Every structure is written in structure tokens, then in C-alpha cells.
Length: 172
Image (cartoon, rainbow, N blue to C red):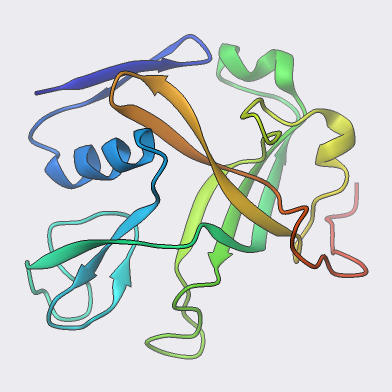
């Protein structure tokens, strides 16, 4: 069964043939961040896929994962191409290193999840919040409902976590 929804007025659709993404976004709709753990490798993977990238094993289990991490990099959008985002500029797209499985299977690897910077209630972050975030900022995941059976994982500043004294931001 295809799941459909909207985000900022834009249509979203996940076809039933895309079983891995359908499962992922359904867990998100339930407020759970779950990732596939390869049965052979024991490693988590993101994005969802049909096979383990390390062993090509097609068997996996969906396991709960803590949605906390550190901003690895970001882009600050000032000229939104998509009309739905234009009123929210500037906004941030974050690439976040999850705390879980960081440095595995090699020291340079991490589970990295992309999402927008949002307020704790899921609204795209206002400019004063955008200015606070840079590489090294601690964030936590929030889920933004986008329809029946679908929610988008997004990021907000982790006010419970210890923040670095200074974060790096692109000059601008």
C-alpha cells in the first residue's frame, strides 16, 4: 500500500515496492527512530536498503537507535529553489553523525543522517536559531508528521546535551 502525505504543502509518496523506506517512515510516524541491523555484520545502516553494504547480506532486524548526535556539516540555504521553502530562508540542512556506531566499522565512518534544523515542535528554525548552529553543535531528532503513516526525521538543538564552547560556521 502506497503511503502519501504532504510537507509544507508538497506531496510525498512512498510506494509499496519501496518496502525498506516504507518501514523506516512508518517507524518515524510512530515516533521511533529505527535502523536496520545486518544479521551477518551486526552493523546498523542508513539509509534503509535491501542489503548490508559491508556483507551484501539481505537479512536484517529493525532496532531502536538513539536519535542524538553532532553536526558533521551543514548547508545554509538562502535562495530556496522549492517554492514551499522560500518563506523560511535562511534554513539549514544538517548532516549529523549519530552517537551510535560512530567510528565503526572503521575509525572514519559514522552513521550520518540528513535533515533540516527545526524548532522542538517541528517548525523550520527561525534565523536566530539558524545562527546558533554549526559544525559540532549537539542535536536530537524530532519527528514531523507528514500524513497518515509517515513522519520526517528532523533535527533540533539538544538543550539537554553539553554543547561545545564554540562551533565552526562557514564565513558569511
